Image (cartoon, rainbow, N blue to C red; front, side, top):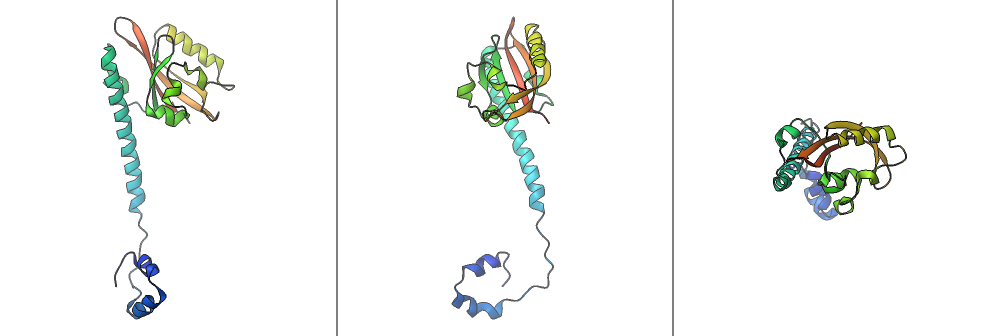
Length: 183
């Protein structure tokens, strides 16, 4: 009997059934190697899944962008960028849209975040100087990247790298933040 899952088969037998076939079971002389390729495949699969998920998020955002007709090449915006979440705010800093990754990263639902400012993510360890720099860059409609301490719904602090890009037609109407958990 040559079965890879012999142990499963044997464990399903009653004692009487086992005794009937016991003499037919021979130990193999073949040296078995543990199956390691699953780890390699799993790593590859996880990377591919992350790439696909990020591309789906980008495609969803591009569909939203068609509605606003922004004068920006979104392919250039997303080229070689990694992010965990996308957050779209209006000029008043109210969140209008978040990607699924936002909920995964912060624990807050999109329903909770919509129409709020990102202030609810800040807390005691959030550096006020960083917030001042962010306000200054936003007031000048300049793209920027900053790292600040944000807080998840369970109040766990985390470093969040945000890259913000102004979106405009004739004038700036929105800001897109590409966010990822840093270090």
